[in-house]
Length: 315
Image 1 (cartoon, rainbow, N blue to C red):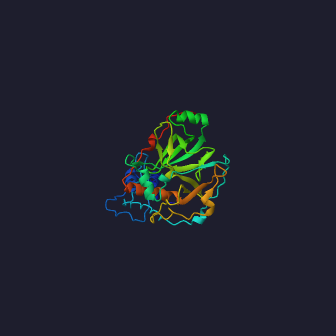
Image 2 (image 1 turned 30 degrees about the vertical axis):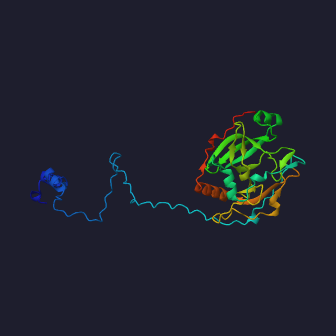
Image 3 (image 1 turned 180 degrees about the horizontal axis):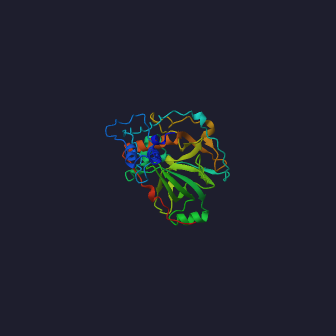
């Protein structure tokens, strides 16, 4: 064995350590970041995890506003045309319990019996009275004879009865009312006009109401007196006339002059032997429209019914 050709042990150890642990400057050079200054942009397929913004950095989503469109005006519903009703579908069938027995009948003054609608107006509208009202009222109760005498006072010695009535609607001015009045009606429990019996509490009427000399009571004009009945949801006006010659007719209002059946012409209400006589049947809406148009065309003013207040407070 030739030992002189072997490397010294110290050199062998030094070589081994160098191979396993390279110098620091060599390590730094190999592990340093490469130069990306000339690298191409990342490919679109490369995905990176997005980082969520903080609360202050989060942007509110933009509100998407639809383009404004001009709103088309709503079309007003067309009024339904006036249709002719079948009168047979609206026949008055009401039962009353009379409170008066046999009575005597008064005679009408022949000087004041109109023969037409024109006569009626000529009589009603004299030179000193050029206003009109047409109101709805309900009979509340009848005053006792003693109370009626107190209301009528010394200026009136007739035996007319006095009723308390509530006026609820002004048809010409188209407004609701709540006015109580003392209402006088010609006739008594023993003497009445034929075909025009006394009121019953609860009955509803429409007519002009006018005041006379006595401020404590007023009257319903009997030339334009209508009983109001609701039949199957519609209001009908039944004309209480002293003569059948007066009629309200206008071709524009199809339900102004409806067929009147025999069962509707004579109805017992408050008095056993004095049924009320109806001579014309009208749809109330048509009757009111006719009066408003006709009276306005004639130049008649419509009364302010707010002043229909009785001054007498017996009860």
